[in-house]
Length: 145
Image (cartoon, rainbow, N blue to C red):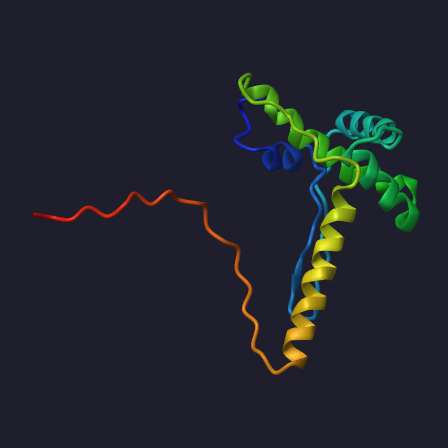
């Protein structure tokens, strides 16, 4: 696993990375890498199994299976699992699942933000959003003698 610097490199090597060859309105033809059929089969099986669990990958599989079908829904959770398997290269790192309601929480927060921005703009205010920086404990200023 140390041969791949990131999980994305592993996914690309396996030929499982999504393709996007677009420039402006033109969508070019894109061919995916052949990859390993054994890795594809293994990630497909684990993605289907993850779809039956109460995890983020399970929620993602079920969400995609509703709209795109079960066969295509296997790819995204399988890629996530491949990226997580990169953790095997660093024994000190631990995997933390984001929970089955991760996508729902993210969508709700985006809806709330959009609603409040729209309300403030209707009042004639210009809205600029930014995330706060890390909290820093400012020491009390010292006075020079």
